[in-house]
Image (tube, rainbow, N blue to C red; front, top):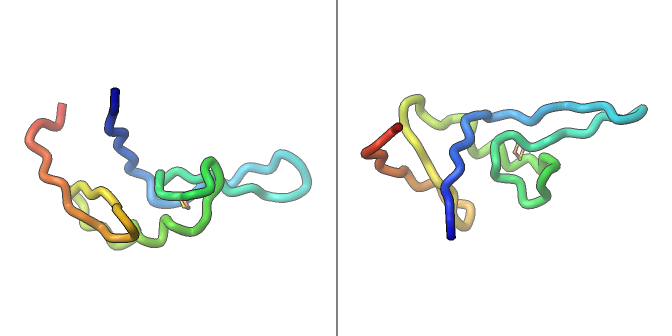
Amino acid sequence: MARIVVKTEKLPQEVKPGDKSVWICKCGLSATQPFCNGSHMKTLDEPEGKMFRYENGKRIEVEVKDKQ
Ligand code: FES
């Protein structure tokens, strides 16, 4: 079984479990989940209204036929 999960956030979430901040990935691209590794920088110039997948560091536009 497989599934597609859509992430719309472009920036991480800061949490402070102790004295230091930890940045949690909300873009879905980090290879060090659940922590941000800076990969969200690739998403910052994504045009609104379009959808993309990322593969081997490359952005590929996805055609969406059914948005339900
Ligand atoms: S928020 Fe996903 S890598 Fe930073």
